[in-house]
Image (tube, rainbow, N blue to C red):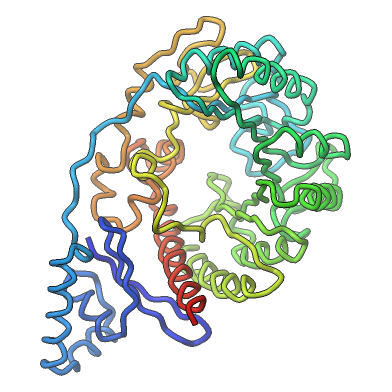
Length: 454
């Protein structure tokens, strides 16, 4: 399919044509843009229709010939390819270890119910369960050499000694198993003291620092257990870590809600603090005063545009940064399998609870309907995996004509289930944001590329 879109950068309108199947991006003038929308049946505004009808017939004929040539070359209107209808199952490459079902913050929008995952006990993973998890991953990883383990919670720094023990054990098994482990951690930074910073910087392949942006935004929804504000402590620890981290992998991850639809200011505030790897995600919740609704979408999409403009500007200065949702590699990635299957939850990626239970991902943890076994038993319930294996984007009717389908893979399975009612039915509020983020990513790529050539 072909998709035409525009982006206005400092009062200059850019027009693009994107071929979904070939991945070809064309920067065109306004007349070609209008012709593309008409030719490929894309909805046009009243103004666009009026403008199109004023185009001279001879000019339209010339444009038609150019489009015919591009189609013959395979860079426009490329036929949809036939892909496999299911993912491979039974071979695991990554685990999310829930080091503790406990947290030292009480974030209002937390999907994990303040770290407890809707259980009655604030459980902590033991060294024994951690070692069993590593053994399980090695045993079920097939011929894969590079394996990944993410330490998650709750707040994993509340059980740091066990994290250290698991890392040490995994390293001790690398040589004899022929495997290599990369470790990551997601932390709210409350306990990120000097000794923790030193150890994480040495042992973690990537570290995710949770901050919601501006102080007023963060303190409004993320309180300490005693109800007090904690932004200053968290921000100070995170800034210190980023300075120590240097050019090693990390990123700051925040959440925006209905209370801060001006979230571009949160991204820019984080950049002003010195962070150069940033992600701000839309909240997914049913909490009435925080949830994102369709009514918010026009404001949100405009805010992404405002962020994109500032993003291009700052990347020309000493405030250069990456924003997760604007990063796109048109030449090298993501790979085809990932474009079709998404994160791989339930198939090549699993979550393990503090007591050793196996689940498709962290968002399904402690959900008995998706229990897949235990690290103590060693077996894996592949009937659950099979449900996820069939959940690829080419099997989703609602995604067939979506320009973003190969970049979002049909959306988060957990969000689809919780908010759209089925894992193969995308959550439409997220869809609108995803499409605009992809359009902006493509536009940024083209604009920066053109400026680099001048």
